Length: 427
Ligand SMILES: O=C(O)C1=C[C@@H](OP(=O)(O)O)[C@@H](O)[C@H](O)C1
Ligand SMILES: C=C(OP(=O)(O)O)C(=O)O
Image 1: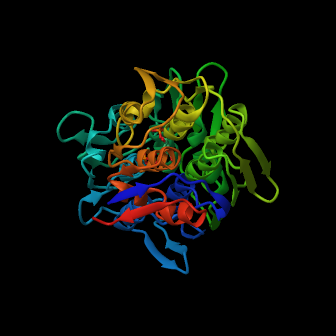
Image 2: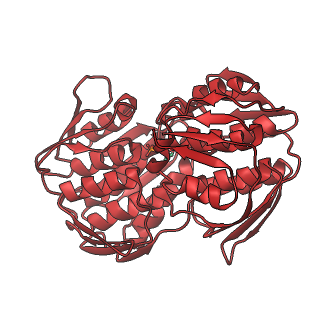
């Protein structure tokens, strides 16, 4: 699928889609509970992968009027009857690898071409230390993964620099084992807010996990716990909303985004980043309403350690801002659906922008964008970021646009409802 984007501004109100991260966790933890209703979940390709995997592991999940009704496995997932295909979803792979480690038997997990390049080494090692056996069939730490259950508690350490999803996965599985676990994080924990999202929902489900952040972060997890996530309303997604807010900021327009209540999402940082860049932004937290008034933007220095999913958005903002934008502490952004630092550098250069790519950062000199035929890299966040850049440049096409179905299926409808001239060509 290819989109053709013409130069346009945006104006109006839109309701942000539900959070992908909260939805994955609510379905997973709901499936490990006895009964659960997940209200207003995100239904997208990635969250469908989690629904599929949880069903394979024994949960019954029905969708009714947009809500998910789950009859769960009460902490005891079943042996899956077939290979679990998680598609493009890294979150699903990491969470289900840990959940499969609780199964009394063998599970096999795989996914699409992109998913099968993503690293899992630290998770595989620590699951082994905790009593399960996980084999990467190609011995490269990537899926396909064969998981032989037997997870028990222990004292273990894990590298936090590649993906926080490893830690979230362990926090979900370990409370259900028969021995206590102490999990220490080696080095810096990147994407930490996502661990806080996990802890928030686990605690809502009644789990007890203690965090000690004195030196390195350490989690102490008592054994033999039960989950009881009864009724969970998924909040709006700040990563998805970032494209709408940035579109207004970049095109000098006014947009109101609703369903933006405060939560544990690190990507709420987009609001401060836009303010620092000079956009007019107000956030009515009580009513969950963010209003952006676009103005001339100036370059900014952003530490992306906690907010990797904002990087494509910040990169296009930097590309139209006056002066230099530096996105630092971003090496983990290379381990996503694609190497997003490289992808954004390549595509912005096609638009005439000066970009310097280092291992851990991008340095962007903002200026005038020129339109072009851009590659979306089969990556939803690259496609959405390039689409809004195209609204400034005009005369732009972006291919592999179907990847928006991974996290924000209504993205083109929403941006068009704000007046953007974006034509979707299904071929
Ligand atoms: O746990 C989650 O829901 C996520 C964690 C982040 O990944 P990493 O922890 O791998 O950086 C983020 O990039 C991803 O989109 C969603
Ligand atoms: C990286 C992402 O998700 P996941 O890791 O679940 O594939 C994302 O949504 O940008």
